[in-house]
Length: 175
Image (cartoon, rainbow, N blue to C red; front, side):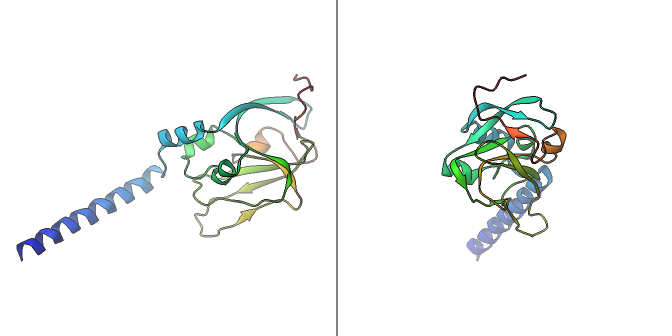
C-alpha cells in the first residue's frame, strides 16, 4: 500500500509540474529564442537587393533556404523575436509550384513570390493557426523565389506586385 501511495504522489507531482511548465510556456510565447537563433544560424546569410516601387535599391541580410530540408523548416519552431528581426529567401533552381503553411510558426508573416527574373508578382499575409484554420498559401502560378518576412514587411518597404523586384543580376548597380 505504501509503494502505491508513493507512486501516486510522484505521478501527481509530475502531472502538476508538467501542467505548470506548459502553462508557463504559453505565457512566454512558446519557442526559446536562444535555440531559435542557433537554428537560424544554420542557414547561410547573404545580402539581397530589392528594387522597390520607387526604383530605390533596398539591401538587407536574408537567411537563404535553398535545399529541401531548409525549405521545409522555414520559420517553424522559431520564436517571435527572431522572426521579427529576420527574413528567409526560399531559392529554387527553376520555377516551382509549392505551398507554404504556418504549422508551428509563432507569428504572422508576409510572403512574396518572384518569377525567374526576380519580378514580384504576388504577396500574401500568412496568419498563424491560432484559430484552428490550417490554410496553405501559394500563388496562382509557378515561382522561383519566395521571401518570408515579418507581417507588414512588403508594405513598409514599398514592395508591390508588378512594381518591385528581387535583383538577381549581379551587374545591376546598387544606388
